[in-house]
Amino acid sequence: MTILSFKEFEHQAWQAAVDQYDASFSRLTQQIIPAIMNALNVRKGMRFLDVACGPGYLAAAAHQKGAKVSGVDFSSSMVSRAKQLHPGIDFNEGDAEDLYKIPDASFDAVGMNFGIVHLGQPEKALKAAYRVLKVGGRVAFTTWCKPQEAVGFSLILRAAEIFGNPNVQLPSAPPLFFYSDPENCKNALAKSGFSNPNVQFVNQIWELHLPDELLEAVLKGTARTAGLLKGQSKEQLAAIRQAIRVSISEYIQDEKIILPMPALVAWGTKS
Image (tube, rainbow, N blue to C red; front, side, top):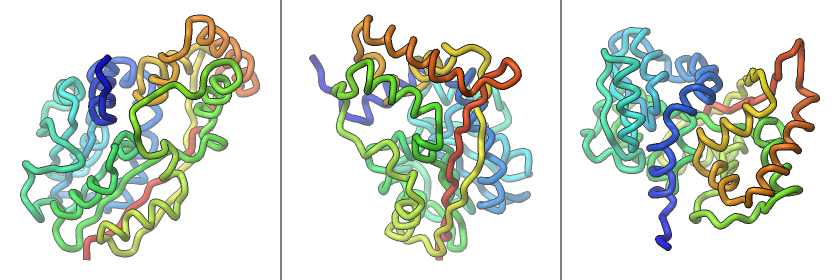
């Protein structure tokens, strides 16, 4: 059996997850985009790079503000979806941890919306962002809060721990919730050369209609947590599904499921 590196594992997952991600998680991850726009002070005429752009919603928001926008993602499937959805924006395949095709000091702002949790070497991505930014330019990235706060994750992970196998063998990678600690965000920015690191908490909610939507969204529209679920036996996965159906019931409001899914936006400036 071929052992994948974490980058290969993530790439394989995102090549296949475009439809489910765009139909489910994109509705959630777009909620933090206004906070990213504010952190980066996106405005008309500035050069903006969307790293790990996925379907391109962050790039589209910057484009709407009049920025000159480019987007990169290592998944050709995601790049194709971004081009389809936002035909007026330049999207290309690119490695967030390198950005070798992009010249030094060529952008005023770099944004990465939830991409950092999918990188094996996130510090390399921050240093690459530093290189391609002009002096005075800003980088911003987003990440999930801890599972206790981002309830959708806690429902999945707790069910897997109790009713399944929480120790499925996955490629070695940084902890999924490492950047859920604001101090880790600030330290990472400072170590990459950015000054005045800041972190903002952003409330988000994930509105679902059926209990099984959560499991299906994660199983078919993510990488690492999907890998955990795919590593379960048929019986274990059925038990996890049933446990989620029970636990998610406390979040039903007016016949809808409302899950708190707060996140952090972190940013810094190239001095």
